[in-house]
Image (cartoon, rainbow, N blue to C red; front, side, top):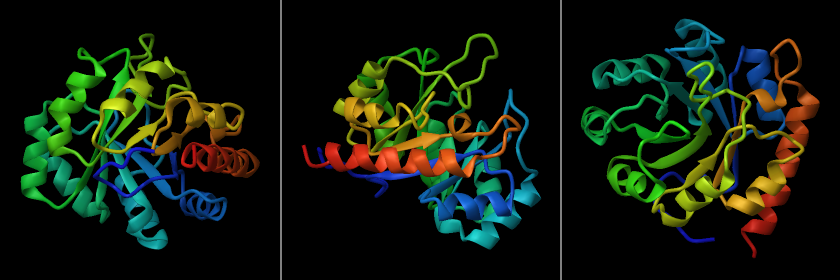
Length: 231
């Protein structure tokens, strides 16, 4: 696999949509490397309030926690990260590179910028060229035109687009969008991302994370990475 600069997340599994401390500990016990906390969302309701999320981060440790947000104001974004005590933020808002440069100027945050397939107005090459100087990693996800959601849609996009971003990006790329235990190994071998992210693909009918599905997802992702990184 081509070496990239940025976040050291090669082979990582992120699980997004943590609903509480017990679930967070279960996810870590099942092998999740990163836990995603979605807040300030335009479509979905947050799983936790901001104070609740901060309490979970404090309990499990900020090193494995990622803020996922559509907050677009640099000052408010940095303030929220400081409130939560997280060092990584995943930005899903449609903001220009200058906004992320301002975040960098105000903080030491590591920034993961989303490339939402079906929403972005530029191709992977143009996107990587514009955003790589002000980011530390990218994440691909799927746009749902029926709801306007740019994440947690449960929809799979054309993996060829994510593969193209991996091929031109100097930063690590996380693959998300419609992944589940049944397709994550194939996705890793097809796209060759640095890491994968799952949200709805490991949930039970009530929206909680299913330990059996989480464990299976992690195992399948690891199997895919083991082949992808050695071939």
